[in-house]
Length: 395
Image (cartoon, rainbow, N blue to C red; front, side, top):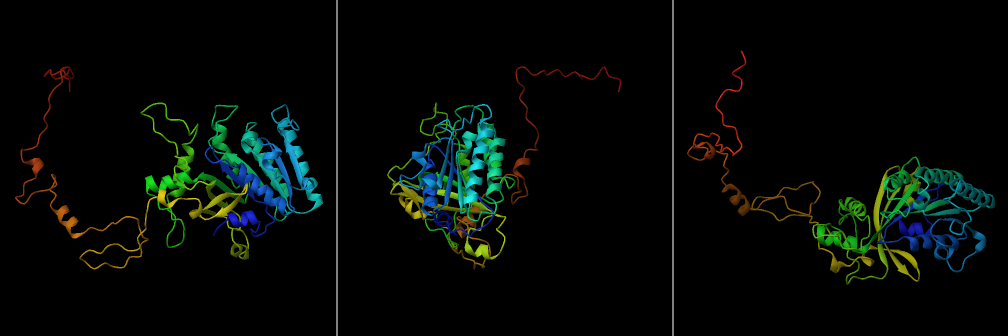
């Protein structure tokens, strides 16, 4: 059930409930190219695009050739709106909502792009929450419209050393109270998936299917590595006792500008079959796909195109295990990547192990052969006075 091809071609089942598409990138895998590709894809379909630019200039977000009449660019970098000035956050919100209302009167699909939520969160997470909620409310009822926001994971804040804002920002954006329909795209370097397969033994097939599924531990490992990447991943640890958490980037691999996209969807009909059933699913659907750079843009591809089999472990999930001398019974348990059964030689070796707390054949327990007791060797500072310390008590 791939998501990215439908997302790029805008063939997701239509809904009047506009989704929040959140892109989480990192220092290792920036998301500007993905953001630019989604903007170019929208403009190629004559959709109106409203860009709320807090970090990037127009030349880095918009394609070289585009219909300027389809774009509203709110440029905070050019002092069009001084976000960090007095009343700047409120002014920024008013300008953004006015642009959405103006495009709604013209009709057609509307795509609002926020670059990025981290810069806006410097004014407070509640400012981000307010803007996202109000924009989605304005887009309500406009079929095919959406809000795309860029979020940076583990980027050191240029204004504050506190990580409290960063820690609460992502849960706030993914909360159902923010948006009932959310698609979260997390970008990972291909080298990270190859490292998890090679050094951690995770099963990551290049062609995932029901017969060869992805390792169920993969989402937890990806989340763990993302939380460990705070700081500069290209600098060696300060001392030999510190763990080197850097990810080796493209050491002899395929290269070519590919990355892995981990996605979750909630309240969105990912497939056409889901739309036929009525209301979107409220459960969270998870998947992992590949993205590859092509002619300055991105295209969805399979994992085989962005991962190198030579740099990954050959972890096979067996469907059957080697049978022992006793007939094997058919099991309904799911297949495991390890063997829980014992061979005859392993059983014999286990029987020969003498456990010290069990009686021997002669009935003696090894630990009680000498009557037991406690052997105590006093230290130099121990008080070995034999007098009763309670002799003055009349008891």
